[in-house]
Image (cartoon, rainbow, N blue to C red; front, side):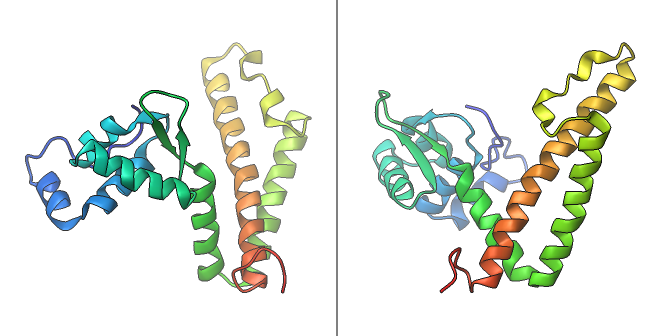
Length: 177
């Protein structure tokens, strides 16, 4: 398993005990699955959520029906992982509620200007086509890697804010009524 573990393993300050006491089983499974970035057997998720495997599977199946997780039934045992599209949707909804349509449009314009600057700098429209090792200097390689990473994040944010704009303009719907 990889990813951030929401259930503290080192319980020197009682954080895990508080998490267990203040969170019901469904929420613990939900917290754990959001931390998982690779397909993971439901038994491992149950261990991290401190519940039975059957209980974890029941909650994971419900989360799969809701579109929160992907379920790989071909693997034995069944494996689950978070659906990043769900997280993006939640983030877009948050932006749509926190900002006005005009603020979102302004943010998209700023992001598009950043994207255009990267495209001009690297003379391409695809950050994946940039070779970061074209230079011999370690600092220059690191700087190029950071710039390409920022460019990819900018591209992602443009899509996210565009989705938020659509939601804000259409009362929480993607398609106008």
